[in-house]
Figure 1: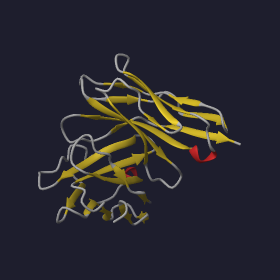
Figure 2: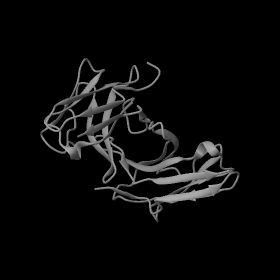
Figure 3: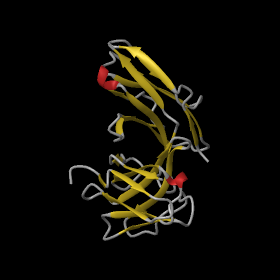
Length: 115
Length: 114
């Protein structure tokens, strides 16, 4: 079974600075998808960024980028120019190719952006 | 609709009572998922519906939990004889079919069992 590990329960960063959230995963599959979701206090999970394992190029979405290391099974999220609205829980998630297409989540990292 | 809608937003119930949680997926989405988010266990998959196929119930924690999806749209998650350990946020997500497709989440139902 796949597992996802987020080793940083909490992190904080100053506004306008850069922060990196870590995620590692375990799978025997070769093709899969990785995601970072953000969950603000409103509880609604919002997709931040997505990476397809067969793509070498790291995904980017505006201030958000990932460092995908397939051999190391690592998928970290970098947030540049942090904003107060980035304060939230961040979840790393894995989705395999087969089966029910369910997401397997890490435990989450609580990020606080300080003014 | 514009997004995934879940109701009620919050539900308080007494131990032993049955509860029903509702999910309205995004119009046109054929896949629907239920997840549970609790302090101790994080986010766990419960059940998955895809079109007219048999649902994947592999994540349901006990036979007190059941779910149905009527007409390929609205889904109801039912918990019978609730226990205190059922207290959690129940999240619903929907997507178009296929692993490439993004799951869009509702705001969840916070269930508190007293």
